[in-house]
Image (cartoon, rainbow, N blue to C red; front, top):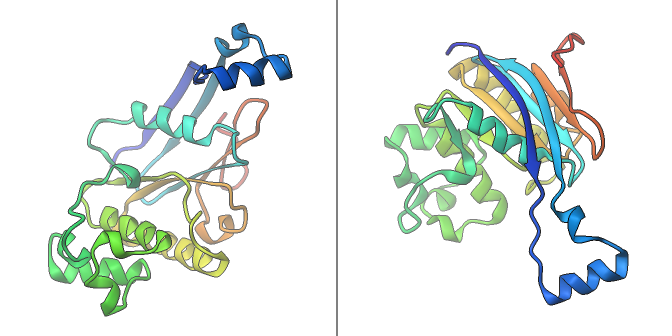
Length: 217
């Protein structure tokens, strides 16, 4: 995998839906229609390569998902797997969604779904956290060299999130896959040990840092 250079400098429109109720809220709080047409500027510049983790962190509403969408548009088509866009059968057992039986057993176990009862369930019978683990396992089995995930570990409790983050760090070295992950959870960074950290706030330009303190922005 060659080093991917990501350079984004674009004006992003804000998305709102006008309705009778929303107009009442706008009048009550003094929000003009011209404000709805404003665009915000998104500027970020970084690079990543195989076996590296890019962590995008920030509070809810800071623009993580918007940045992730821009990154996806900047990457070559079919070079990445997005957990939210994976295609698979919802009717069969989750073990049947993998290319081979052996690969499925390993990937599911690595993601924390080693229980026989989980493996024979269809996707619809899994809990929210189990569905996230399954999607991650399925993405790991694919040929794409970059895996993208919004709301990484948001459906897992603290210990589970830390353990899975540590597992992802190990998987990057074993498979040479790269990961681009968005999260609001600060505690998992030390388990992921990301090469690139992009910190977003509700105001100001994203801060991009590589490990060791080198500034890419």
